[in-house]
Image: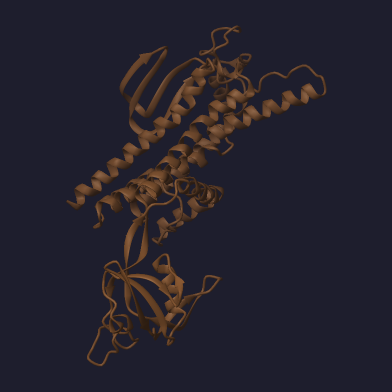
Length: 431
């Protein structure tokens, strides 16, 4: 059953990735068609086509490998003069040939100089909207997932309801209770499982963390507990025992100090958060992923070093889809309530969409952020010409950036390969 659950978890993540990619490409497709751009294909996945159907001039389809997707828009770049060739190849060698091939492929989608249904003829702001549509769709999907997770399911919270009691006060010399062990103050005072702590020394407590801090900071001091039992309030006097405990400092270090202990364990429940919690969680995750993406080459290098040396990986480092799928499988196979596993899967899928959003906003071709950067540069050139009353400049020929695009593609391919190998042979584990 555990293996079956693991396989189901992996399959769910693959389906979730496919849905995320489909939404991303839909984010490009809808505004492109709205603005009149001719779109030849809308495909989810790569490799052989499993299913396709043509509608209103666009072929919609699903391919065998759900690791990406694309839409093909007519005239992504303006038509450019044919390069001089030598013996059937563009003059200038390998990269010149790449540039010319890109131009030829682009020119095939443009039906003459009067073709208005092409991407490059759109106003700058419309081009930016089309290219932003994909990443923004992933961002919105993450907001929806986090909202379902936080406001629909809730956050596991230690409540003020007592779930269990300790029989004795723990000591450094004994791990189990003996006849000579001091009884736990809570049980000795008469607290029972199911009691709800209302206040301590006149201070209301909303959750167990608040009660815990008061108790730990009051070793040897008598405290007045107001508890609710069977709908009625009772008052109990409890003096926390003094034990040695670790206390975290503001700089992250811990020290051993004397702390209070009464011996109660809380009931953990899902507490639903306000509807805006999903947006807040999304913003926090975007900030965290930006920090990772900014250092991506260094982090991937370290991941490769850890793979070769057998060192434990940074659990907060980058993952490939293989790693995300493994984590999803672990969540599905975990020995925990089904709601916990659903919450874990939603959190992973939302985080994956945050990564897709941030990664695609990197201002390098062939990523969406690169196309946005090209459009912004053309807008700046046009604004500059208008300011100084000069003739409008020609559209930016992004095919000249094909060598840089190729270099970025190779770098992404290498980093992706390193992460996949690391996720296979030196994986990050949740448990």
